[in-house]
Length: 535
Figure 1 (tube, rainbow, N blue to C red):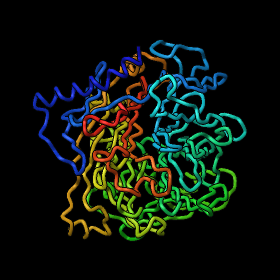
Figure 2: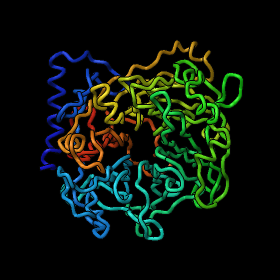
Figure 3: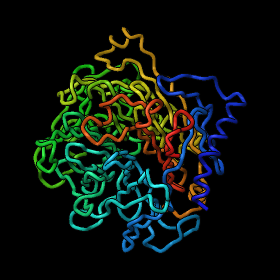
């Protein structure tokens, strides 16, 4: 039943979009290379809702939660794409249903002449990594278990972030948990996309332990990490408590040899650092408001918080001690194509509550500009300011050099407060780099206006979980795993190295995961249809 429902949803969502616009939803708004028309409204938080996409796009499901794994770890319950069945419970919609495992970020790779999509799993009794064979026409043979044990054969933490490191030929996985549990793990792949060493994940202690989520390589082999740890409650919101990191390896081909972990420090107007002790003591500090004001720009510096190859250390505590600058739950980041890895954009979730009276409540999208990816410092500016309608910003991907896709994970509480489920937006960016405020004035810069390309719905399973399901499963669907790539596994294929062409080249593909509920992973076809037979 779930399989039929999932397959039907793509068609229903497309028809719903067409109907909405036939009734006068919005005028066309061309956004760079994407044929995007604004979807007028988010779906309300009531009952079962279909996904609504911009009319020129359509989506097809590539995997969903109850697909069995071709090589299950039955003894540990790792048997399905989106479920752990260790407790023997049924797969869906009962008070004792199986634990959902929430496939998260996606990585698209072409290896051995085959097209694969990899993802880590965020919830459940243990972490694991799956692979979808996009060339396999039989859904029951499509999803493979890549890894669910560490180098000692034990379970490892659940996984949020994932990226492909072409220098080490490993999937880098992040566990979003406070030290000592969280951190970075690596799983090697061979030339055919299969795991090496039995798929055992190796912890990389030199990269520290923290609530890591976003992770990306730059062209120099540095590893950029974005942390998401909520701070203590204050004035209806949260104090800043998470950091942006850069790991500079001793040997970019072997991260086990160690290196330096650095954290981002943002300087105030007078040149002094904005520190955790200041911002947590006063979460209404005027600096936070200025940082979240479009057209401002602040100097940054990378401060080394650890060097060597010792056992995992508490990166969050080390960043605080080194006077790095905490932010309000940054989540994921990506380099802007065509900038030579000189511009790094990352999302900040914010407080996800309309009751917060703190500055920066609704987060936004930030840009770090540097003279090179390995520069000692640069500047930070806000590229898009969040508000009540556009908040809980999470996954992020460039669809063209100028079109940035940003999706929400606002959470059930925020969904209720604004009576709106999550959406995906296109931000059409300007020139970008801002060495100081004067460069903004010279450009005549204006804040980019978000255009909704996706109004996420709520499937039957998520509706059940949100209203009456077991507490160990999440509620409303969320949007995660937005990913645009041509699958090139070499250093030339690093995200940000090429100009994406998802509307003109069949090599470029776009994916997202409707997490929670049925846990369906979708492919978006921007031109509305494909002629390559992949449907």
